Length: 228
Ligand code: ADE
Image (cartoon, rainbow, N blue to C red):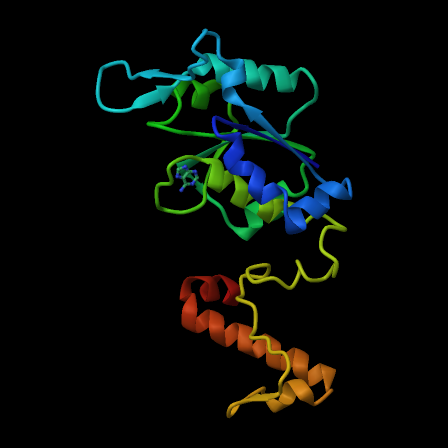
């Protein structure tokens, strides 16, 4: 899978993609992440990518032309499944969106800044908008990193233990059960005996019951979906 990220701050994104699982996925050839500096597609000498808003008001607006130039040049090379604008107004990211996006071949993520993009970008160039939550970030870069991470870790072969993405929280609308490691007793805090019993069937049932209980307690709205 290939993800192209269009940004005015590529340096902000270099870090997250050059360590740990995201780096390993790229080193193994399972995912490609390409960063494109929007300024390289600017049409003026100053390399500016924003301008004053028509009608006045505070804040700059990202211009359509550099964005169109960048998207058009990418589309000339390959077909894209989605052109996604990272925006707090978008559909809120959840595990099922990440699962579906992980099945795609080529994605473009466009990071917004300032007061956002010229509305015509949203009308004509992008196919969907994704938010990572009801709060406003300084730009779409961190949101794009979150989306990219949540997708790439799902690609077959990326995680060492193939089953581990399947047993993540949210895969079945349940929060993951508690986990423990050695020592079995620390101060007087002990690991539940069942987990040390070696009885795999009972352990599986205990974990499932704990997941349900936790979800009911912490995320009642998810628990409702699970019980349906
Ligand atoms: N850009 C700014 N805030 C954002 C958010 N919450 N989600 C996605 N993109 C954003």
